Image (cartoon, rainbow over all chains, first blue to last red; front, side, top):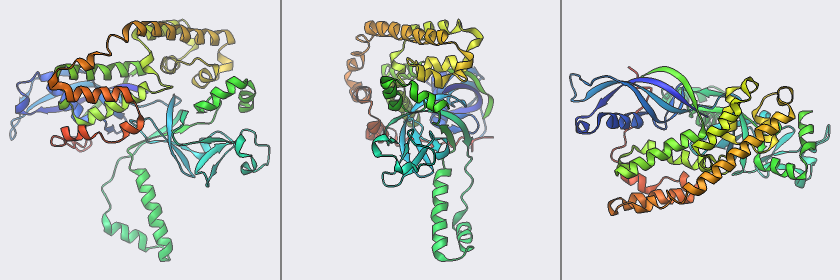
Length: 242
Length: 195
């Protein structure tokens, strides 16, 4: 889940920090700038691991700061494709399940990567997995006791399917938005579209999203697989593989 | 800002947890916990909560136990990839189902014997960690309480976080942390500083 990334940067030290140990002061400056932020194509920075190289400080014209050229290593959260981890279900929508790790919650399991056959129950607002489903049967015919629901707050084991970085573009502003919504037909449709756009935009805002998969034996809610072991889980595993 | 190498090495969960714990305890010992940037403190707290939560359990490992497991897994040589070994160290699978998710094409690549060998290794490592922790745990627990009166506020905050480990608690912004860091919060947009 975690990697080390080697970065280079020029970091200023404010005159008030001159009395401090320079490495301690620089460490603080680096953490202030990078910790808990997403670096494009690198991942979510956690904390500074160590400073590899540090030049002598130089004073530039205009401010009293000492500018140091630094090479350092950051601890970065960037799970690789195929990595398995345990998270917690945060929410479910008809299109995907959102998973959170506490410090990072832009993890999505789209409906097609949930264990098959599964379906979304709009009444309960949860997905459920129906392993006992027969061929050609409607998932909703499966009695409630035989459904394995993906409840909010449950621990889920999933595997990384892919990740994407999103660089925020400058906001279009009210003018651009109005122009876009004025184009297609009726006002009702326009309002709906605006809502959709808003939703999409909310989703889009996360600069780093990870797509996960919960389809496969052993993946899915942790409790499913603990129970099956007690019952003699072989049957279920075979079913999944086939 | 320049990325020299986006991935120089992999870190295991245990290494990250011990780094975070070390940073926290160093800052507490030096009395600089309040000076720690708010963003750093936020992610460190959340990370510690995640890594010590159930089913992740990086706190139930010790340097010795991870080393033991890694050496044992090295005996499998090329039959396991590096990332698979890393994941075994992270997940500590004690059941075949979990091991099955970590290793691709499990049936074709590994015999039942080697699978049970891996599971036995994990159990050995867990037992070693448990015995090491049993001797270690009583020692560090009283240390946060020993903080001087000047650090009392900080010490209490830390203690609460360590005892509760409730995701709900952690998710809510810590009022104490905000009050401490509100004036010096600097919003540095990493992309903007690229020059």
